[in-house]
Image (cartoon, rainbow, N blue to C red; front, side, top):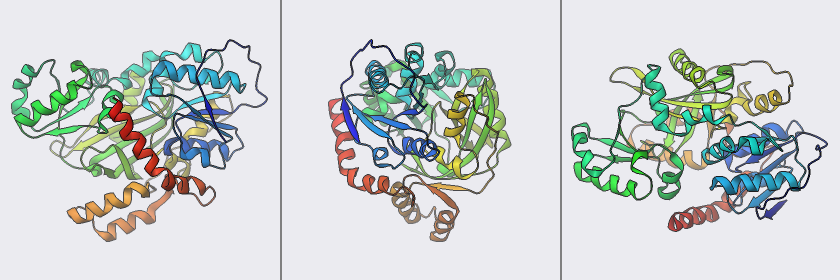
Length: 409
């Protein structure tokens, strides 16, 4: 059931709901993983999005609600509060699946807590993940390796960086850049490209948000993720994964195939960072191994349910349920995933694999072997098949909406 609601302030009193459910904001495949994790345990789950979403087709979604906007922070908060009041969601667990909602929920946490149990942490902790300037600042203080990163407040400042080419041009705060360009980063190989891409970036984001970063050799196979449910800066349950395929190949917007692995150094670096943040909640910390010095260098910190978090359910680390149960004071046991379990997103992995095979970086045999290790597909499930059908049907709509939003920006 999809309902369209316009955000508005309502001051009606709230009474306790008969059972505690979850409101999931964002209904694409990360949100679908949350819906399935909780819904299969009988937890009522509402999904809120500003577009048609595949989660609304899930047998585990109690209700799907479409609102006007979940990109703007204030409009998102107003929409969430309106939904909470209208459907009497007092005490329900509020779960973010996108970076922009993380910022909104953290900054307006006190206001949202009038109705919801907010799983997004306080801004004092979230800020270190939200702004990469601050992420790298904290990492340097903790002696955690990072790629060499520079700021240029004017085009004239680029001259001092010519000797560092090639460079990646990327945003310190992802959202303004990503939704306008559809890119995670751009590669500048020459002086001319550096100036051209810097000017393009400056039209979308503030100069102090433009990062110019050294490019670590290698593709997604050198990229690792530390995933955890964290209490008071200390990991409760964990999973370490290697991103074996991604798209685009160099600056992957998203993983297409990941597999659990063991990496003590990634665990140690991540736990050091989380203690310094004094973080609570779900988190994914991304690294890339630099073959030149064999160091794992921190790239990103995602303080939310990430794209492949449903891999945890196949490894005995059901991150969403751990988050939900702990908020309600239910008993939970710590867990750690073993190596060799795969997660795949076939919609993007098949074309990615075809390009990798054509490029010579992947053999057909290796690809087939990886699929045999995959226990979780991001969308398809025999027990819940409609979302995968909906994804195919909705694909033209979602592509058109994406390009429309970029033209408006």
